[in-house]
Image (cartoon, rainbow, N blue to C red; front, side, top):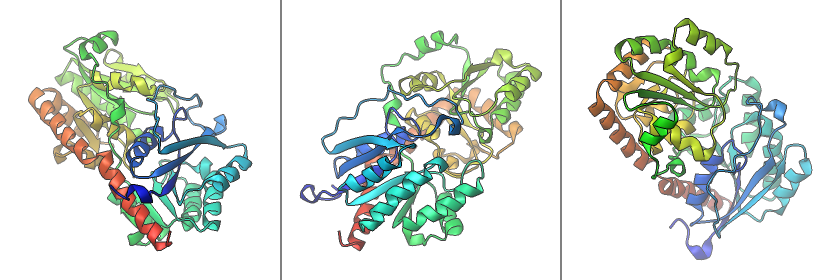
Length: 392
């Protein structure tokens, strides 16, 4: 127990919950973990961005998440990007003792700034979880506005030690104000009744194919082309290898399509280039033998990585951001942009079923280190610290 029931504090969580996508998986798990220990007012969105600002070009919600009916959680989905009065109303109407804001996206800056300003006027402390300390697209504007927003923060949570150093070095945040709390595994995606053989049949896969999964939004930093360039060497050694690419396009696919044709990979690449609903995520991880993260650059921890961990999947990752923390054996960490090394590691794994099994067991042990009960405990300690500092 973090704080005795009779002294339960009320926490306002600012982020996204279903059907809005964005950080919904993370916020869903965090809210469930905190609910036994605090009263939660979750301030979420009914309309998060104008569609032209969304790289995926599609803002449809996802109604396939499990329901969350918890007595200590009150969900308020009223924020609208086009209505500043909704921002002010939410900030003024909450009775929370503390604001815990999830920060990750530049278009949300005005909303976060407004809500944080009113919390400060009410002399209530603010904790930020900074999911992207530095933006994936190296935006100077993101960094500048983040610096301004962080002036309101009493404490900051990041997911990696790299992120901690970036907060200190780039934003001049005091080290004692920055805590590292990992991104928990996203266990709600797991379907214990899934039939791997049947799912493979539905995807046109047999038992002999060895499936390499590259999952998540298709973005330049993800290294899709690095994986494709590795594939010819993999096929030469493991002809039954298949690269399964699944995720929403955030960039043009044509250059990758040309590369697939150029390298004669059509029979070895399976594409699902659309948003994967929450209740369908398990199908892709269940059919996979190995998951890869050939990212070019990355500074945070990966939600897709947290999903792979929850399925106890063998993983090969680039040596960027927090990805190396998701594997126990440094042998399966590759340098970014190194297709040959990636191919070599994939071949080694696919040719050794016992090694794959061992890697899966290691991932399972990592999943136990990323439990949401531990995350809730560490987060609660931070809440208590900042509340005591404000004599609340």
